[in-house]
Length: 151
Image (tube, rainbow, N blue to C red; front, side):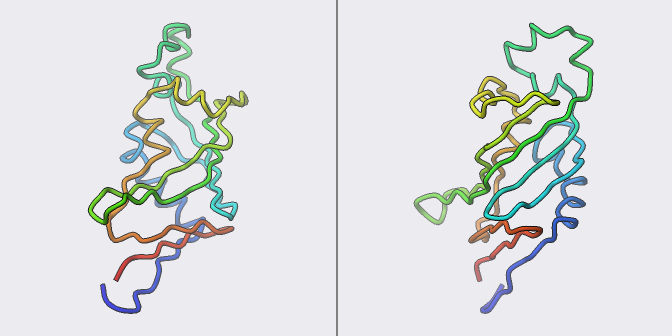
């Protein structure tokens, strides 16, 4: 901390490595990160493997799926625009929010509202992350993300 604090810049490769080790804690479900692409203009593309039961957890849709299918690993594809949610006062919590533009399970694209039918805390945890109060801004550029920290 101090005047002239330099922003933290993470490359796409560094972010992929970090998320491979830490995303399970944020999502609160076992998920294997396969690829994260920073497309620029705030857009993030994510691909990962997750058990279907973890996506359908707490959803009425789970009862419609054969139990053997629930144990299968499926691809989860998300394309979203990242933005920092900042409360009206400095003491309110900050979150990095991902507004879904594309959502697919396996090869099946689903409308963005469909995620609300999947109340899994893990899935909801993927699209809204708690951020430290010192984070002033997060900018997603092509191939890198820049995090500006308050001084």
